[in-house]
Length: 110
Image 1 (cartoon, rainbow, N blue to C red):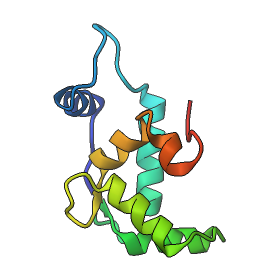
Image 2: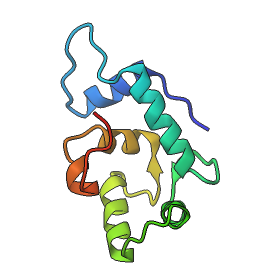
Image 3: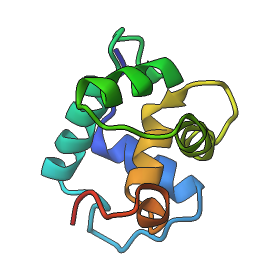
């Protein structure tokens, strides 16, 4: 399992053109912990990456019925490097972006 420190996340986001205001962290520690816990929950096999079958398994476990095409489309949007798996950085990038509402239909965290 990969552990990501807040400064690693800030560096990653800076490289992707996100503005950082001096002396402020993009994510509060509590938000970062929330996203890490959510990612770990979704990562059923503990590989440190989310695969589409893990997403499908979790949705079934939560009795959420989503169309296969919708799941595949969402997964593809989150898999920025097209590796076939979603890393924590990819997950964090999409979950903290303004596009999260377009992808999931609602904002996940304020």
